[in-house]
Length: 391
Ligand SMILES: *Cc1c(COP(=O)(O)O)cnc(C)c1O
Image 1: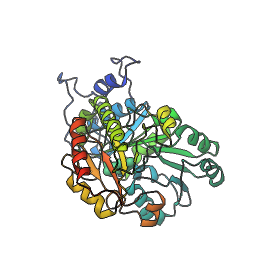
Image 2 (image 1 turned 90 degrees about the horizontal axis):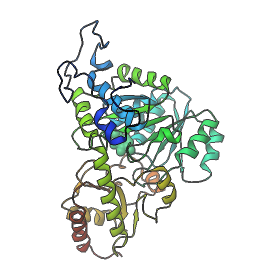
Image 3 (image 1 turned 30 degrees about the vertical axis):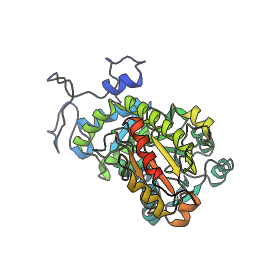
Image 4 (image 1 turned 60 degrees about the vertical axis):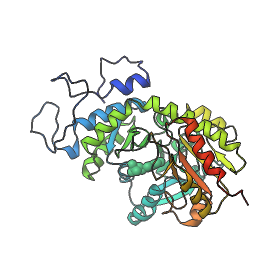
């Protein structure tokens, strides 16, 4: 990644989010780089562009900004988070083993089970909050350790530093899906991971109007493989989506603080509510990995899980009463969303696998937005009042 001499070395996240990745505007003085809506480039241009599938100024700008915000030397951007996952797993060979956290994003699970297995890649799952998980890494000697922290939707917090050390002891690469935490709140590479993956669709862009994915690393050989996957597998994003995401990044620090403050406040109020059975939020003292979350993350982000102890029908009836929380998949946008994981994000995961991971019918996952917290609470409050008391 090219160093920009105009940005101080010790510039902080907020400053880098605005000033890094602003190339390709020198000739005009435009304050914001334009969108390079071109499929191809004339041969022999000074920057070495040839065809947008293998690179575009808007990709390079976004890659520079994301790398800087993740504390990484390298970043490659893709069309979506799932494209980024595809790029990483495409580096594996038949017979290789992925040892994965059991509670992962539903589409990651589907890609592992329905696509990768066909190519002879083996996949094993473990609950990495359990102390014996490190022993499984030593025993199975996988090629790739697949972590997500906090996990989707259970919000388990995994010890990235300890698990990375255990994996490196047997020569295994470590990937952390950093989507739920965001680059502001958690930096997996500084904790020892080899790869940090983002669905930039979520908190990086933050406005629910573009899709994207990214893989960050400090290892030139991983970067080479990711750039190869971007062009060879056709996983490249659109210049326009990159431009939107570059714009979104500029306000990420402000947004993340508000998402985190709102979610923590709602978590506390929900936990105290008689109609709520339990609440999971990494920065609540009741969270099983509260101490680890405080060490590993700067704040809890906007994701919150609550168990209403209901049947599926009752949980969905509660969702219907909400006015400010739209029922939708996805997360990390400025607007609040609610999701019923068992029938939505994790519907592609078989029931017994889902239940083993703790994803029960009464759970609702909230992506808390940056509206006023009292309006959000009033909305939840009125919906809870209309619910019959728990059986
Ligand atoms: C959304 C998401 C993805 C996939 O990203 P897309 O941009 O939807 O393809 C991967 N991991 C996590 C944790 C996600 O939330």
